Every structure is written in C-alpha cells, then in structure tokens.
Image 1: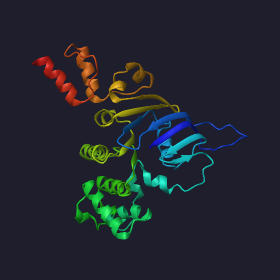
Image 2: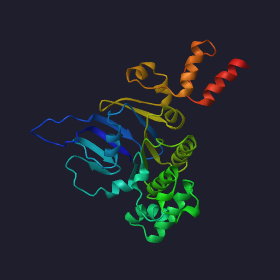
Image 3: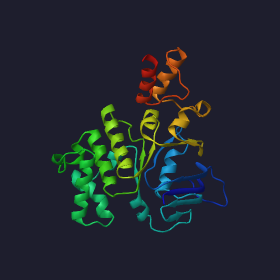
Image 4: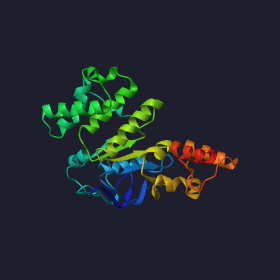
Length: 286
C-alpha cells in the first residue's frame, strides 16, 4: 500500500458546521504507490502543493474525505497515533538544515532512529550508513552541524530522514538554494533511493529541468485541485495544458523549440533531455 486521497478537502480553519471556510484543497482523488514511484508536484505558489504533502504524513488532517497512508485511514476525526505514519513517510521541508539541533552530526542523524525505537547501537549504525550514502566523510561526524557549509547541513538533515528508513520520501523544493553541483548530487541521490532502494520519492518543485531528468510522473496543481496527472513526456508535449496553467518547458525543450522554429531540426515529440536533443541533432547532421 501507499498513499491514497479519496475526495479530500482541506481548510486551515478546520471543520465547522456553522461556518463555511475556504478550502485550500478541493476534492483531491489520487493514489501514489508506496514503492518505486518518482512523482513531481508542480503548480504556481498557493496552488496547494505543500499542503498536499503535509496531509501525506499526517502533519495536517483532512477537513473532509479520507487520506489512507499505508494501512491507516486519516479523517478530520482521527485521534490515533501518528508515529507509525511518520515512520513510513518522511517529510523533508524546504530548508531542512533549519531543523538541526544536536551537538554533533552523528547525534543529529541518530536521533530519528532512536525516537522510533532502535537501540543506541542500531541508531548509530544507521546514522553512519546514511551519512556515507549522502556523501559526508567520517571526519565530519563529530563536528557540530552548525559549522558545516549550507550544502553539507542539508545533507545531514536528509541523512536524518533516511536513517528512519521510510518507504516514502517527500521533499519540498529540495534544490532551492543549492549550487549546480550540489543540486546534481542531491537529485542523483534521490534517483539511487528510487531505483536501487525502491523508495517512492515525491518532490514539490518549480524546476522543470529536474522534473524532466529525474521524475516519472507529474501532478499539476491549480487552485487547490489536481488538474493533470501525466508522465513528463506527456506533459511537455501537451502545449494546451502548459499554456493553460502557465507551466514552463525545460531549458533543453525551449532550445529545441527555438531550433525547430528556425528550421534547424524537426520533431513530433518535444525533446526534454540533453540526450534526446543530441540524438535529434545527430540524426540531422549525419
């Protein structure tokens, strides 16, 4: 099982029979597998993307409808334990480095597993495993996280989520504030978690280049509703949807369209990766 939304509405003012509050999310119906999906959530600011992710791990509860997370059903009346959900679904905020608080890098990453019932030895082992996976060397383990660079701090924070070994990882704008090299390293890490560890990855992003290169499915939000659920290939070749919701093409696609307008290349499907554009150029000039 994964995450399922069944006719979900959400208002930040909660549920009331006496007053109609405006819904941030409206009649959301969607299913996301708990294994091996890589989903991008796109849409303009205020469209409900972050609110959606917060319902995915019980940070918020639906005003109406049902959110099923693994084997638990969340409604506005839910009063059970949320800890099992947090173990299954890890949510990484836009600037996760702001969540660091322990004395050392190793202690900070080990805190999550220990909070979920692992022994001290097991927690340390998991912390070392995932610190290595995100690319931090052992000489940093006993450093205070607040002396690290911004990119290193983000890696520590992400390692802390990974060390809890959730089935689903949700990232809100994971590449914001990172330089080009750090962005690539982070997205390649998420690709490894998806393809080799079979984790479902959900990212909220405005970066269409990231969507094109790494994701397998795109949910487009507009005014609190999911208005499109397609693969990146389908979305970037759907000019009507792109225009209607003012969505950008990836840089490679924009370049390809310009070249087509100038008669330099021709294609039926818009290329959206460097490799696909290179193949078109190779075919043109062989």
